[in-house]
Amino acid sequence: MEEKKLKKINVVYLLLYIFAPMVICAICFWIKGMFFPKGNMAVILTMVPCILSIVWWIFAGKIVYTKTKNKLEKKLDEMGFERNHTFNGSSCTVVVDAVHGNIGMAFFWNPSEVFVLPASRITKTWVDDGKTGAGIFAGSARVSFLFTIDDIKVRVNTFTSNQRWRMDSDYILTGISKADMMVDVLEEARSIKEK
Amino acid sequence: MGFLKKIRGFFHDDWCSKCQSKMEEKNRRLYMLPMMVGHYTSHDDAEYYKKNLIQVNSKADIPIGNYACGLIAYECQECGHKAVKLSIFLPVRDEEKLEDAKYFENGEMDNFIER
Image 1: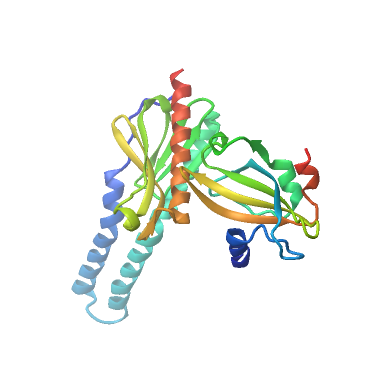
Image 2: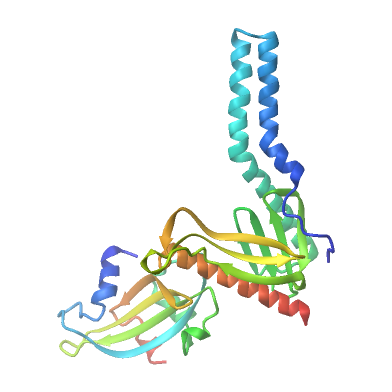
């Protein structure tokens, strides 16, 4: 089993993802300004990098993340990992082998690595129902389950929304149920590994 | 779940569909439905429930993230009509998220209840 430290974010990838299109756009604008101030080439050098940048920011992350998840699945299959529970979060995928007590993880912001770690390295698990307000004003816009590995906190959202929902709404209850289930599964895997 | 079914499930699940009189509750049981949260699929066939429902004593016996199914068997004292209502819900801490309600009024579940 791997002993490497968990790394949620690959800083180089994060910076490239955000700034590379900007740099390419700036270079294209500079070329346009210096060599093609007018004409078709000027339009191409202005429009194409802008459109490609928007396409990159919208789709590239999801495509890369899907490839990372596929890489994780391939690795798990090679290792004989029993995939009892898989939770695909928007920023992190968690796969639990409740038989051997291992967990596999892939992160949106770290596509260069996937992690397969013993669940005994989990130190804490809990559910955050995102509740704010009191009484009839109680509500939430995010439910997630969290765990710490090597003192690094991993948050996986089971429900997110751009509006607040009542705590007894179907969305919130489903999110809490999923989070409770994942915490239960992680604790089970940890107890198996620690035996 | 359909709107009318939901209304009926909330207010008048014990009304006889033949004579509209109040039916008597004959049997009430709790089962676990082996379906996980996020993977619920509606089934209209009674055979599915007969094959998959697992009886439990209380909600505490249902693993976290699994669906529960409450069965209530009714019998009309006026016309003798029998009906079985299945309430499929997700137990979440102290709450219940109602997912679906199924009514079997042609004796489809009779041999299951008699088990």
